[in-house]
Length: 82
Image (cartoon, rainbow, N blue to C red; front, side, top):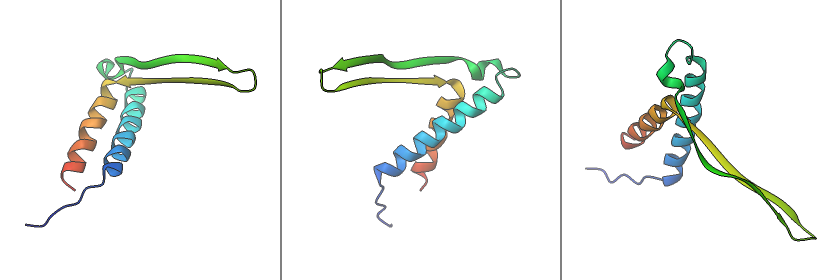
C-alpha cells in the first residue's frame, strides 16, 4: 500500500473552486430549479478602523447557496480519491 501525502492547500483550492462553480450553477439555474437558489449569508459587515494616520475597512461576507454546498461535497469527494 502506497503512503499518500496530501497537501491541505489542495483541499482549500478544491473547496474554493467548488463554491465558485456551485454558486454559478445555482445562479444560472435559479429560475428552473428554485431549491438551488436558496442561500444564506455568513460573515461580518464591513467596519472602519480610523487611526488618524491609517484608515482601513475590513469585512467579509460569503453567500452560500444549495448548489455551492453540493460543490463543496464534490470537492471533498475528489480530494479523498486523490
